[in-house]
Image (cartoon, rainbow, N blue to C red; front, side, top):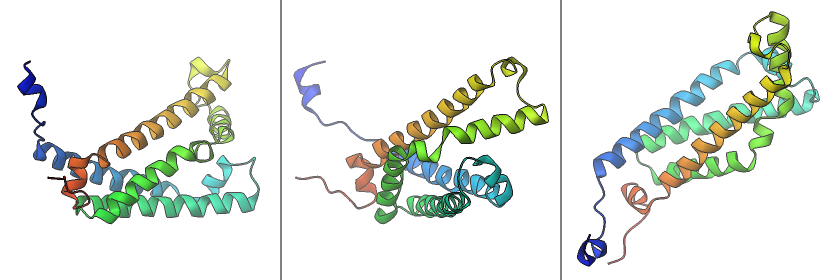
Length: 172
């Protein structure tokens, strides 16, 4: 690679960026929508947070519903390429990173494991050590949310992506 090639600016494939925007927009509509339908069963939700007071569970529940509605709204706004919703998605992703342990309390996964044990649906390999299952679920969910959030922030703060939303103009 010569010096001339190194000095030339990279060309950005706008089709690939547009695909990424549409993909993430659809993802941000359907994933929270799927999760939102699970929130319609408050008693089931409540049973996962046995260690929390009723007030704390209600506050968390209302916040979970509101957060998913905001994600769905941001997803629609992303598909429509609205700058406000690009910023909202970056903000929500950052918020998820900062509050990951509130979003996924370990006690919730213990509750899920207890329910699965009682129903006989805990995978056999974990029958002798259900705490290992708790930690695997906890780590999986935290790492998945962290990975998606970091990727959203990375993608939607690229100058070439911001430009497609009208939120960035390259200097001449």
